[in-house]
Length: 296
Ligand code: ATR
Figure 1 (spheres, protein in one colour):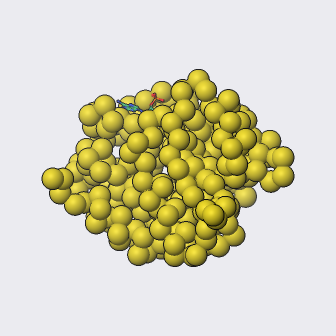
Figure 2 (tube, rainbow, N blue to C red):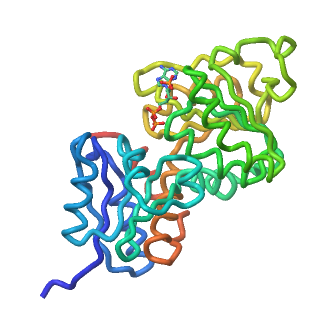
Figure 3 (tube, rainbow, N blue to C red):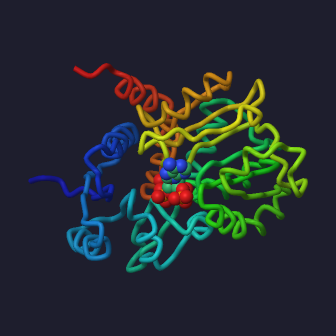
């Protein structure tokens, strides 16, 4: 008889590329948890119905990726503080009849920067480029990590202002200042900036959370935004991350792609579901080797 195992999945569209099944299989093996974890493609207008069917078939929890993070937020009946601030979530689970939601992306990024890259965020000046779901998910955890100032710049300025506005209370409690602008404003010389909080001189960490490189477009940033120890991070990995990271390398920045964040956010989801935290260093090294392996 086949043993009954707890069932999880990653839901998205597209989903064939997802590394999450491999990651969770590695965590399950390491922690000796009997689970299965599948990929699930749902039609872009069919998240609620698809999730309900998966639940009827025994699903206990899931990761949610593009384009469903907002749908998952809207459907959940309980939200973690991180999910509430992000208004998007990547981790769902049922507690009895209650569908609960968290967003582990930001925690994953902070752990990757501090533990894996060994960069302390306390008091640091952070520039986030982009104001979509990915950008929204990282602001709260960066504030909680003790960052000194966070500026969000986006092609469509009001989206950056909206995200920054809803984080102001938390930022004040942590002694972090926030500002937002259009992407174009990054090109205005610091001497012409209107308010001190918005001074766009060099940043300690620059995070590309935009989807520009998916369309092959490079975000054009002035080199005055970096200094000799700036860390540049792209939340993507693989060829998509290179567009931004090659520019950053040329400026002399240390660079990091999103693979470490991917592993760390998955570990946090696994912890939420199973109550046990997998260790990530070996899993990240293995995944790095797989991603960097030359194609046949
Ligand atoms: P995700 O969930 O990956 O964050 P998203 O919510 O669609 O995806 O957000 C994509 C982000 O990339 C947005 O901030 C978008 O800018 P707009 O808000 O102006 O649309 C940004 N983006 C996409 N293409 C871009 C480009 N060519 N140049 C600059 N920013 C771009």
